[in-house]
Length: 330
Image (cartoon, rainbow, N blue to C red):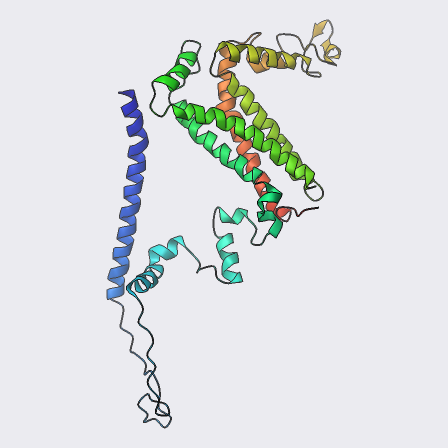
């Protein structure tokens, strides 16, 4: 019953949106047809004018040139591109000139992120490796599969592990969990390779220093996404891996009670940084890996880090364009 409700909750809104779009398109086409019927007919101009006003369309005794008749498909295409529905979606003509190419790029929500002209090296696979595009594609895949997993996963001690087992054994489309898992591994690899390619081609040099730092932050966020997601299965491997990883936070400079500089943060005889107030305690929501840590990691993994990463990705793409596009080879 739960699976049926989930399927209906996903498919019914999409179906209604599709039906509404088709109905609106048909209404627009019908309105355009009605308006065309009421348009005044144009008077046909003579094909050829005589030299002395009495010619019958034949120049020098030659045959009359008749334009070839357009096919039905061409007539339909010409009619379609003149409708108000088409013009409301596509605001410019076919991009066959420099001007129309620029207008198409600037008036499209997705295409305006890209420059109108790019270097030849920017589209060569052997130069870019397409690691930046693959990283963004995997981020979209992880967002979609993660959204589906959120319908079935409950971040509590009682249900976390059993929900993961149920995703693998009982839930339809449970392969989404494996896609999410392997997609996360692949994204870490592609982001590392993207950073390596940028470094080896010198794309971090002026004027691209700011965007390089944004990319480094995105790399750290990618690793944090992998780290926070590791706890969610709530098995022995996840619990002890996060225990070892979170223990490193105790050595954080100034913020970890075992880190350098924390002994200097005292107020009289009271230590400002101790085991109950340091970076590890803030990360886990307690002194050990428990329900508080599971909930915090879930929120960070599903909302906090993806939101920050998405904003920085937009800034990253925008700066690539503003800095002159993909840099050329050294």
